Image 1: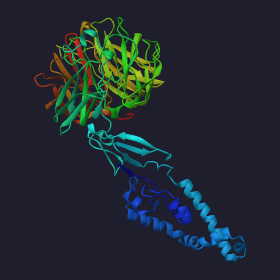
Image 2: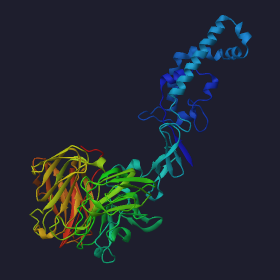
Image 3: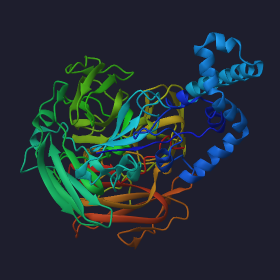
Image 4: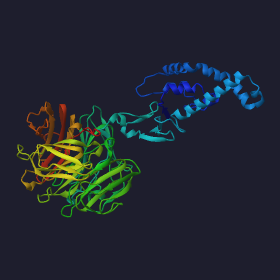
Length: 607
């Protein structure tokens, strides 16, 4: 079934001029699908202009009023049409015609030519359609391109996501449609992706790759997981509940160290008919090498990413993965400013440069032979997902033990010039801060970075360069002259800062904070925490209990609170606040940890 919605500009000068056009010219004007002219009733009934609620009748009144100033000329043109034709076809008769008739005919012809030229240059419609026009073709919403030469697919109305194409609007509608979802970590279409993991901890049933699916709404969510065309799992998640789904490891992506490779249908695809939140655990339960990621739905993906990873360590590689949502996605990757050795493959050379084409669910995984992939640049002609991390590494290199790192990275267009960075707490002494390492990575040349309180690390960076703060327990504000990516790394257990090993998390800018969160922290861990960054005056609760213990972060106007989470329940927790706050969630055990941002609104170019 096909339905069309047109959005056409109503220019009064154009309408006035159009009334001067001859009957032959009018017959060739832009018509709708039923063949009526642009002033016909059918067009008027469906015509919509942004911000204008003019009805078909009102449009007709406007047209009549616009034409009233040229009514006399139109009458002259109509009544002399036969004379004009006679003058064209019978030269002698035209020559002997009355002078007045000749003058009228000449004047009318000139006006008709001017009117025709105006119509040709002012008509917004092309040979196929009118720019901005929309239609439904089965389950695909299409939009006319800018020059009116072709229809282009705008959105697939996916029935698994409960979305249909409205033939009256010419667009997808439903709770999971693009127009309804917006830009945040809440969505309906996700791509959980297995990444490199230490080979002793990537085999089920001892260790399971898993996702946690949180239903933030008030209706049941039908969740379906596929790999390629095969349905792997489906379930219903109740409102305000979290379901944990274990998935098979993808050996091509998790085992071994090399080479860089493209794995067809390597990613899982997880869809829901209601908005949800998804976290990825590699692996799920507390072992000696873990990490977790907040997954971004496809509506929050971008085209450009700055990579955060860690240095190749003890013959174990760092990595990043790129996942496509659309077929024929061209991905171009560039190595970092500092030299890096890459295990070449899949058209990516030993310096980390190359180009590859991915189809839906394909995964490109780039791995090191030496150096650090941090500062690599990923650019694609269609939105992609990028995960950065390490198979298993010490942080820093001389403090054991190694642990898996991974983080689903934020697109460059959502990065900011301001961040609040706070360290995690030590376990078992929760009154002390645990040391971390922090990287501030520039996305543009000539980026000036400062800190409050001062960290003696101010610098000016070019694209891909980064500042690294080592073994710090400080909380501080990062200020930059241009957007930067800020990543925090938990240090290893032998450093003397309490239980846990390395994990990584991205800092979230205050411009992307939220007032409410629903998240999951697996109760199998020795201890789970949520760290809250709140502005002055915020009243915050965790699982309904008020947070009262706060520490100021310099002169930033923000405060940090560390809250231990109960392991008595199913691992589901909430944070509520009267003002927007940021959260990060982590769990620790002896020689193991995970860490992820609890959520965010992915504002474009936040300031």
